[in-house]
Image (cartoon, rainbow over all chains, first blue to last red; front, side, top):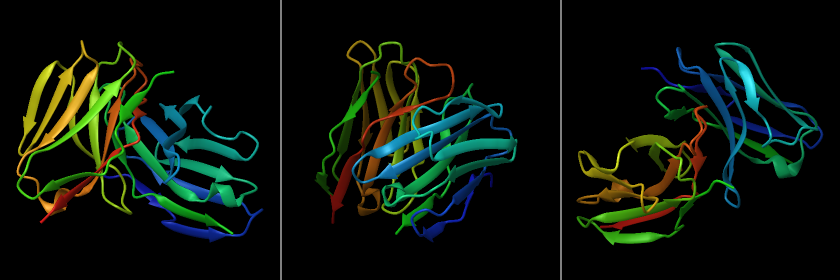
Length: 113
Length: 112
């Protein structure tokens, strides 16, 4: 049963600390997406990759957020330093350009105090 | 600005009724559309996709696409309390990158 996995599932940290979230996309998918979801803003696209190359990261604050894909089985999203306004659920999704659909991981619920 | 618009709801229907969820989009170049269901505290789950004008049926779900009117809908027949969730509409925004543009979602409540 192929699925996207994310770690950690929950993270509570203090303002100013570094946060790293990890995602393992579905094997064979060539696109990976990072989203943030809050009640106020809904689902926001932060960054996405195709064949491990970053295509667009205009949705994320560049001064504190960074997204990488060191290999085909791992995507990371880092926040440094974290702020209370970063509290949200962060989803990773993977898909294929040909088919168009995306499959979401279970999410990381981040709380910054 | 490419947009996908949905009424946030909540849309309330009695058990057994047909629930109709609607979505409009601004980019005429959009080709593919997707419906996701998201239960509270869970991640979005793909339930339907549609590429061509007309209807596409899958069990109790029917997706409808009208490209001339830039309108997408999802019908849920014989609604069940377990269908209560937020439904997200997404379009490909005429891109060829796999990127999707999501609406804000419509919350559906099915009352027993």
